[in-house]
Image 1: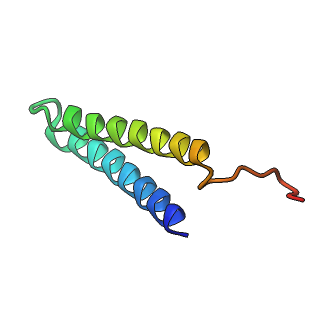
Image 2 (image 1 turned 30 degrees about the horizontal axis):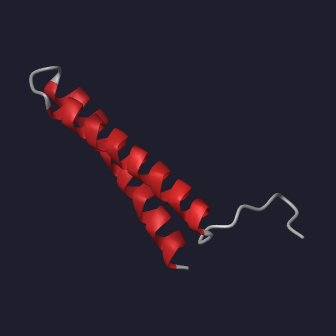
Length: 70
């Protein structure tokens, strides 16, 4: 259950970073590097989430299942 909460929090943080990057892109019109920083954070969070998922699968904490488990 904790792993699901962590995954959802990571996805929310990724979406927030993506949205803030869009706002900075429109608001600053290329005047600052806040857009690049926001998108760098988004990519970093995505890589960390991917590594977390791979580690969870490797240790057996996360079990993959199909559309119709069982």
